[in-house]
Image 1 (cartoon, rainbow, N blue to C red):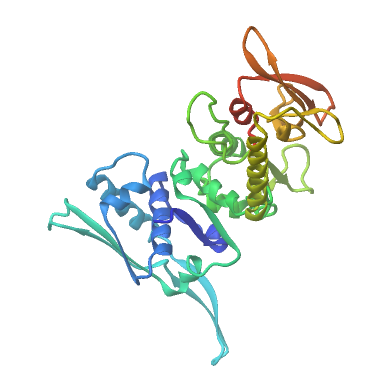
Image 2: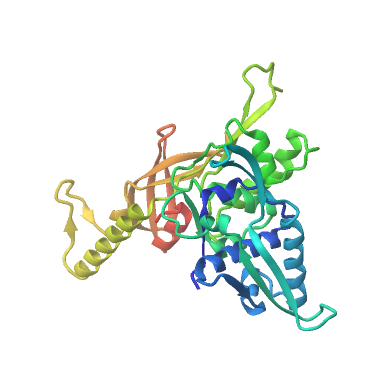
Length: 357
């Protein structure tokens, strides 16, 4: 099964009353199933449902999560403004994402879970079917691996703008942001920062452990800025919006070109291995397997002021250090133009440390 979650951007604006991150995993898994199925009625059995969770849950635990999702999701219907052209009337229509959401069991005491059976409302089919533009896309497994319900919701919102690196639709919509994130109404601004935003930012921008095979950074250099009412007084002005910033992901065609260029470089290096030393036609410097990485950019944490500085690889060479072959790198901080050295055990170590593609 294709494990990409794909839905129309309108889905990100729905205020979905889900109380746990496991319910979010199940809902995203259901969207994947709907997208990949041609049937009007969708059936999902325990063995497939287990793929939507990191832990190996029992049938009973899965049934409990499915019941919670049904209970919470069906608490809120979605209301739309409509117009009756024939009678020249205006009104409001309230509907739900699913026409039916059935949980079947093998026994009348409802202890032996069988499967889920779903039927999506025709009005909402555009959210998951025949999407060619204005859609959000991400890997289901990456979503499942995120800890925290607030981090998961913020992840979905950020993924809509993964190629721009700027989430600004809530610049003047603070209350809408709070509603979508399901932030409790009694939370103060400082509590929102400490309990919701900072932990979510930490989870979504966490740097990988170079010595383990842990997940990669999802949103590099992720930060946020609250927008305050310009008419307010002092530093404690009313918050009217919020923006998020991060390093954008390359678009598919850009990524494809980067991969092709790297493949050509590796092929050329392989072809030239064992031959006489090559020199750059313009600089006269020796061309090695390190050459393609020179002039690449990376980000490094500013220990003094916080945040991240953009840096550039100025030179790379193999050296002997403490009777060990290592890579020496001369870097330049493009914020303050200061040069500094870095050392790496291998190309793989360098690529992981600097997050190079």
